[in-house]
Image (cartoon, rainbow, N blue to C red; front, side, top):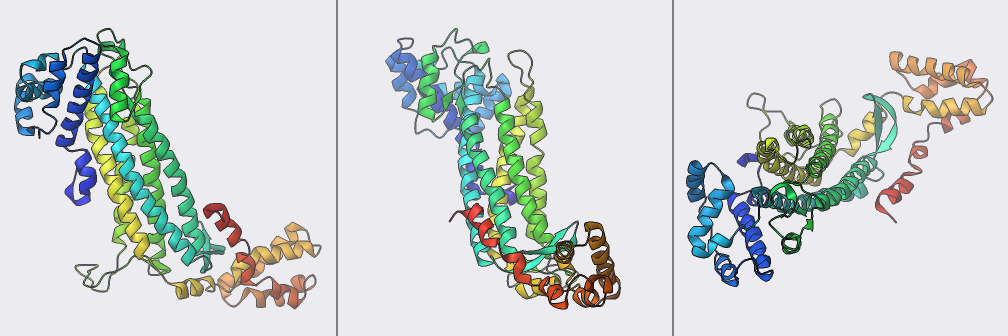
Length: 433
């Protein structure tokens, strides 16, 4: 985890202290149920719970692990230093993966809950800006070329709808990843009653894993990271749009440039889209976890640990980077400056050629074939591109067009309000009534 891109709330989830506290709770709740079943004495439960306020010594656990070469054993050895003789009843019938996988499920669920907070902030920002610029007309572009008008509000609404879908996906992924496995070696419950798993799951806010072999199936994890990748792509979708709109030649929107901010060490005039460029990079980092997570699904027989080193990296990193990126995205949207005047300038920069389809349709309604209509409009459109002037004037001077349409009918094709008539319908579909 790089401090520059790490928010403390997410860092705490993936800290060693949090991990060991979760390990402790898993072991304590398991011991609690084992005592209820008569497998271990109640005195063992009492002794274990006396350590509930202990802040585990990470350095001491690391020291033990350097000798035993096993992280869970190192933790249990350190726990025994606090629990005493009754510690021999801890971890009865469990295997290391019971602790590791259940802990990872808790951390992923905690992370998802925090990510949802970030997503809600992004959604709120997008909705506010969409409503603010609902009818701020601007040129739409396909292939980077002027197409037909849209509004800045519709741009924000489109991103809102995408984030709303991804929020639903994350909720489902959180629920799917939040499973508990306390099934022992090979997952057959030979040495631990399934009731222990049910008890630990309930206490930890998880559901039981139906069949865990010795590990929780990694398709759950792959799905979780795939959803993080989709959210990252949604962030980049916004970032790319802002970066294009901020280009000097376009300048329809720009990131907020704070007093005292510097854009370049060499050129004092620069205002660079540094936030959205950073977000593009953050998205790449989050998506880089998706393929390794997919490759973790196929393990040897009932288990191996080829997935372990992967998850120690992508678990904290993907969640940390996405958490940071969500809040950076929200802040960028909240402060984004929209230049409505520049939107209007660009909309009218090329002689009204964005109305070409309206003229095409009018000609077909007047009786011309689609092929002839296309030819008539295209030749005047190309003339507008190459020679300048206004498309409406070139059309009025074209006898092939005026033979079918009056000047009034041609002018009617250039009413900008025509393109805005269903904006409210789209908004209702996205945001509701």
